[in-house]
Amino acid sequence: MVRTTSSLFLYEQVELMRPLDTVYGCQDKKDDIKVGVWSSALFFGIHVWTAAVAFDAAFVACLYFAGVANGQGLPYFVISVAGAAVQLVYQLATMNTEEEGSCWCKYLILARIDHH
Image 1 (cartoon, helix red, strand yellow):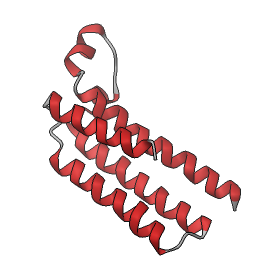
Image 2 (tube, one colour):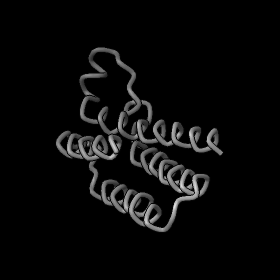
Image 3 (cartoon, helix red, strand yellow):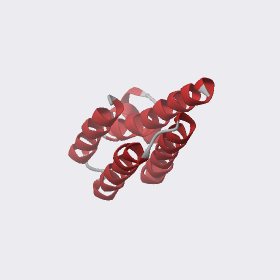
């Protein structure tokens, strides 16, 4: 049980870092092209939003399965899983990947979620 929970927690952290890095990279796309850095934002191109949806869904799924594996109660699922899902849906609904200010704002909020 401990191994499963630890593995899910590690995977959850990886799944949150992917959209965090990608959203952060959206504000630097022009500079990345100039200096030749191949960021995840450039990799996903016009599909950044779709990639962020997939990563966020995987993050919420990991939170859910970690709670199941760890025997968490209803408060965990309402606050941690549903709360994170609502926040991430809001972030995705209001994110403009072509606007640097929007990407920076979303990055800061995602960074706060990561430091739970």
